[in-house]
Image 1: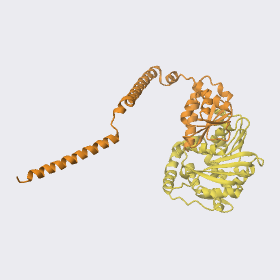
Image 2 (image 1 turned 90 degrees about the vertical axis):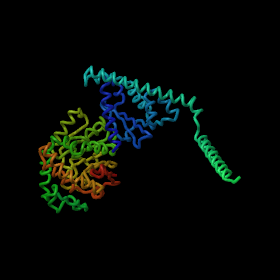
Image 3 (image 1 turned 45 degrees about the vertical axis):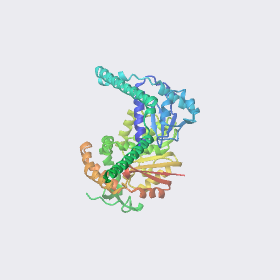
Image 4 (image 1 turned 90 degrees about the horizontal axis):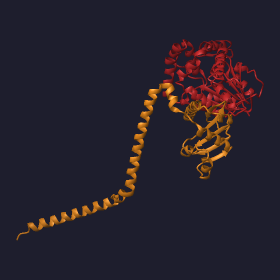
Length: 200
Length: 263
């Protein structure tokens, strides 16, 4: 019942998000229209329909006006409406049915304009929201800095250090040569010892 | 508490003789069952939704979603939500069939129907829902009326299940399907034992605490044990005329969804 748990959570989340968005006129254009999304990462389809200005998310594929088969990564790129035809050309996305339905759903996602800060303030108050946002910004900055550092270190390594780093085969060859010399030294030491024991 | 083994024969699942039937573990006259079951549901109607969430830890919502997904409902369909109680399935079906479609919420119990009607109206779901007080054995609809009939957690309370299945078959359109969501027999013995302990020791106490009615929830636990198991119910559906019958166990068989078609 993973599918049902996921669709149920998605439905709640999408409707909550849409309720914060004042301009949801576009939803009316999609009344009783259904978009089915089949993601390669999931083993089941997700069907999104509009009824009376709210979104229904289910596993029903029978009522699809448009079906999109793609991956989670491509779906994120799809947020921009104009990307749709580009992604089809690149074979990243397989679409069947009414393309307008897909475009309209993509347009709703693009036009979501929510002031999360004022929404949060209505629940926890202005000062805690301000503090929380500051903390969020600090954490985000730290992450950005860490990401930059990692990126810089990685490029430094790739461009300069990688060429100087000893490879595994070189290390093995070196070890082999050390062993050989060690054996030779042992042999010489044995010979010297024997020569030393000879009577004059 | 010892739990009687479930009957395996379809013939003796519902009735012990021609005139008697089960009410939980009790054997009673057939004519008394309707009023006794009605007593249970009049008593729990107002707390029904809260109790469902508590008893199943909210999982009943996922079982119902699974039923909707398996129904293949389309806009314009005519759906009968039998023993629909407080209208969970009706609410979803109403949105999915749209303005062209129609959903009938039917229940034998007036208290449940009233709670369901109030709940759905409060949600603003009014345009395509009708309410009918009906006995599943004698459905007051014409032949070949519905695209989909569902009965969720209701069949075990019906006095004559075979008769109810035949009645449902009659009102389904050719190509229509029946979905029976009902408690069933857990697949694993360990789960079965844990489930028995929960049903007979914890469930009536929750009922006593929340709905102020432990007896009704004792009946619930007993009626689940007396209900036909997965294979038996499938055979009963076959006998009623349904084709391509199948079932899917949910939550390890605690609940099963049976599906059958009329062609």
